[in-house]
Length: 304
Image (cartoon, rainbow, N blue to C red; front, side, top):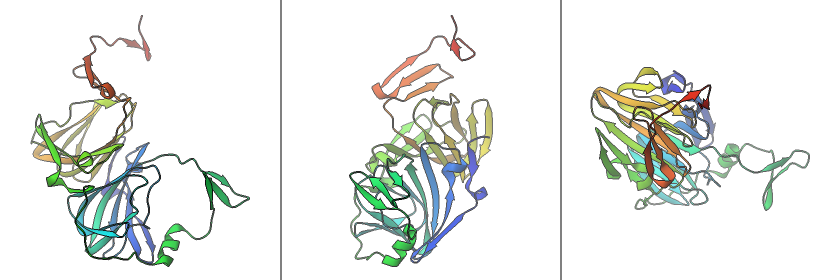
């Protein structure tokens, strides 16, 4: 099935430099996503995930799959454990992660935005309006390694942007419990929900989006994914990418043990969701739902 991948089938990429070390799996690319990405990062015990950084325009959401560690944010330190969710807004806190003695396993969801910098290869600089930066030289990870580990002080009380799944706002919809991790932790341009579906039941109704892109990660249990006229069994570790504008609807049905998955997606006020089983259309930006009485097309054009 196109856009369906399993993390065990994706070769990890080792990234190491000084105090930075871990194995990365590019789940988003494997699942065929366009405007968003997803990495599984297994950070070595006692090591750090990335150079301390802050994004200029992209929002990031992390979910802790296992292990323990700390979130380092502008010198403040916060404890992390399995089931925690972190939201990092652009142009806010400089951040990175450090694994505990058993390592730290996280999912990193983020946007893919084109950055408007212009490279001048002969001059050896790139415009980053209103200034410019050097092009080339040592890799950023090498530079971070040379700077040494960030200073770690006492653990602080966790801010609102770090939340455990059990503490997130939730609703019971049909036969599922939807915990809104993203909004509970203050995300703005993207969202992340933790969804538990009862045995034999369906999660969100069969639908597709015009503008919003989604990624789903199966955490527990299993069942069936329905994608258009196709269906495929899924188990923990399966990742499904749903680019916008395909016109191909999807839904999940839990097996005998139920199913738990993460649903990540963009938020677009121009998005329209279509439900082919009921012919309903949800104009999400204006919160208006209607029903189409007739769909009559020929070769992609409305019939006369």
